[in-house]
Length: 107
Image 1 (cartoon, rainbow, N blue to C red):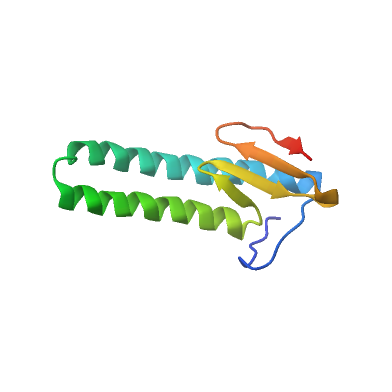
Image 2: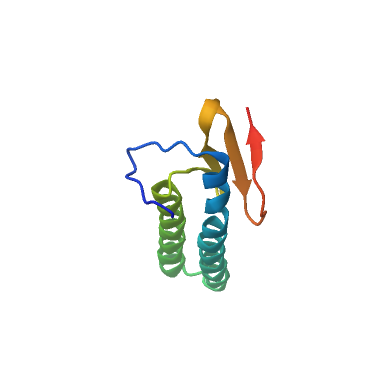
């Protein structure tokens, strides 16, 4: 079962729990990437219209923030766009980067 955590509470995952999150991270990130790509394409169409391009840029930033918030609520830490750190026991963390379907353990 996947839990939702407050932003202020740090969660430590074991290996099994970390791997359980992968499918959810893939879905969340794929959806966010699709939305951001669509907005970026629209931004290209309106690059000469500063009012419209500014409004689209705000939407892009909001979508990135939504993605980041969802990752945090699942107990992980966004470290770059589409790159996530999952805290684990013994101060070793997993790194996941879209579109990979595996985790990398770092010290």
